Structures are given as structure tokens and as C-alpha cells.
Length: 201
Image 1 (cartoon, rainbow, N blue to C red):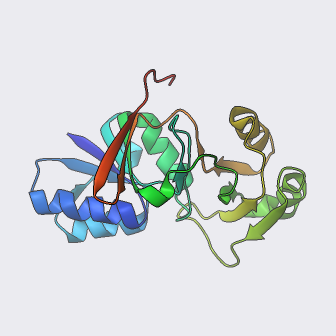
Image 2 (image 1 turned 30 degrees about the vertical axis):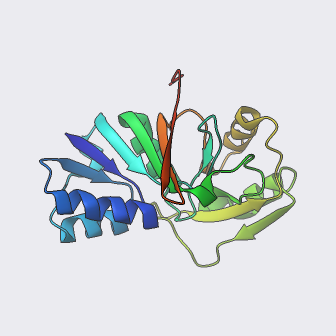
């Protein structure tokens, strides 16, 4: 089995559990940090550039709603996470109860931008967000910058995703609208499973 490993604190716990159980699996990682952790704990990590399909991807989320739309990318790996999710036969999110929300608009939305286009893109984004925070001196594993958008309208998430990707210089964003197949939400010792009835991917 080939398993996609996410990035962030939840993903780190998943990586540790997979290593502890000694399962006969291979992995691909969505960040250098996750790859280094997995290798250090004894998991076999394959480079993704030679992979077209993954059996299962496991990751966390910054926020998730009942229909399994989510915001991811606080750790800056949203583009690679989205690619790995798209390659996976099944994508599962694991999160604590604080990440399950009624609406996504109160969560910052990470946007990955080519450094060359920083000023141009930020100017275009100003019409979509009340405030933009530039992660000063931060670079993704792809060498790009991340801007976090605050105060955005979540009434039409597909429309927002389309508007973002229509801006030249944006290479990715943290909106996950159809990638997640199931989520396991732990809250006060109770785990709730959310399952997508029909996956439109």
C-alpha cells in the first residue's frame, strides 16, 4: 500500500502511529519535514515525482465543515497536499473538535504565490479579502511565498476557488472542496465520522 503523508501536527502524529505499528507500507510525503520525520521513524518514503497514484492519503485540516469542504495549508504545504490528495484513491482527514466549524470564512485562507508576482497578486487579492498577511521571509518547499487572506466571503466556495486560480501568479490555495472523502473528528473522547456520499472528483 502506498500512503500519502500530510504536513503539520496532526500528520506528525499519524506518521508516528504508522511507524509504531510496523505496517508493510510505502509512503510519499507532502513536505520535507514530513519526509524527514517518516524516514527517521523507519518508514519507507518514495519521491512523489515517480508516482501517479496513491492508495490512501491522510492529513489534518485547519477547519472543516459538514460537507467536507475544508481549509488547509497553515503549514504552507497546501499545494503539495492538494496534488497528493488528487492522486489518492481515498483522502482522509483527522482533526480535533475545534477544527469542525459551521462556516469557513473566519479561518485564514493560505494562498501560494510565485515571488515574481507578489505585488501584482496582492493587489488583485485586495478585492477578495478584507486583510492580507504576508508571511515575511517564509518560503514553501516549492520556493514560493504564502499570503494569508482574512475576512472572505464563503457563500460561493467554488466561485472563490475559480477566482483565485484565474489570477496569474497564484499557484495554489488552501480551499479543499472535493478532495476529502472522509473525516474523523475527535471531541471529548468521542470520534465522529463524516463521509462524502458522492465524490465528484
